[in-house]
Length: 355
Image (cartoon, rainbow, N blue to C red; front, side, top):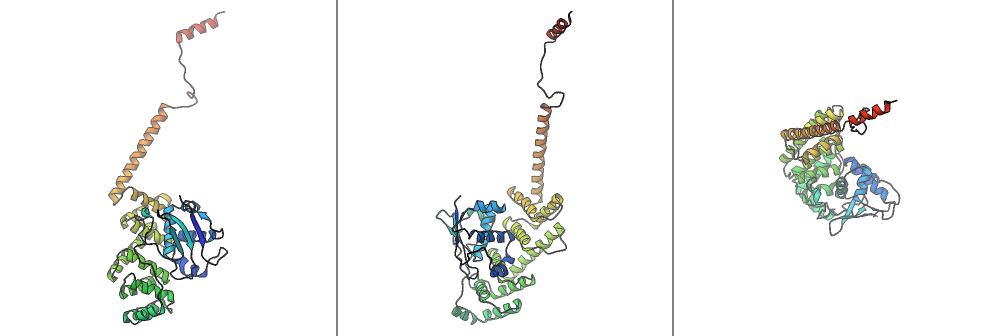
C-alpha cells in the first residue's frame, strides 16, 4: 500500500479550523467526512507526515472506500487537492485555503476504478471556475441570467456573494442547467431550509449525475426522494424529529449506489428494528450491503437468501450435534476406555483372593 504525503499549503501552523469551514462547509457534509478532514488538519502539524489509506481507515474504523469517498468529496468542495502516480495510486493530499475559491482542480482521470460501482464518478462533471468581473458583466447582459440572479437573492434573502454568483453561473454555463431548472433548484433547497450555496451546488451535482435536465425531471426525482424520506422514517418509527444529513446520505447511498427499491430499503429498516430494537442506519446499511453482495433485487430474492442462510445454519447445527454425540464426554466416560480379557481378569481376582 503506497504511502500518502500530507502537505501544508496554508499559512496555518496550528490545528485550527477556519470560520468559513464551520459556517459554509461543515453543516452540509457527512459527519464522517468532517472527521477525516479534521484529522488531515491535525496531521499538518507534523511536517510532510506520511500516512496511508489503510491507516486512516483503521483510525476511524472505516473501509478504505469510505476514506476515498471522503477525500473525493472535499476535493469537489475545493478544500483538498489529490495527487496520483502513473499507476493511479493516491500519493499526496494538499490541504487548501478554505477562503480560496476554486483552488482545487478535479483530476480528469479518477483512479479508483473499484469505486465506480458504488460512487458516481465526479470526473465526468466539469470543475467550477471563478468568473472574472468582465465575464459576469457579459452574463448579466442576458435578461434570463439577470432575472435568475434577482430571483436567487429573493429566495435566499441576501445579497449574492461572488461565490454565490460563480456557483450559479457554473450551473448554467458548465452543467448546462436552464435558468428555469436553477430557479426550481433554489426553491427546492430553500423549502428544505437549506440555503447554503454549497448545499445547492451539491444537489445540482447529484441532479447532473442523474441526468436531470428539466424541471419535470427534477420534480420527479424530488418526489421519489421525499417518498424514500418518509418511508424510512415510518419503517424506523421516527416521528419526533427530522432526519439529519448523514442519515439522508445513507438513503441516497441505498437508492443510487446500491440501486435498491424503496420496498427493499424499508424491509431492511424493519429487520433492523426487529434485530436491535432501535433505528440504526449503519446496521441497515450492513443488511443492504449483504443483499447487494447476494444479488438481491426483490423480496423473492430476500426469501431465497434467508432460506439458504437457514439451511446452512441447520446443516452446521446438525454437524456440530453429530460430532458432539460421537465424542460425548462427561464425568463418567471422560477418560480413555480400556478393553479387558474377562477370563484373565477373573483368574487374577481368584489368585488375589486365594489364602
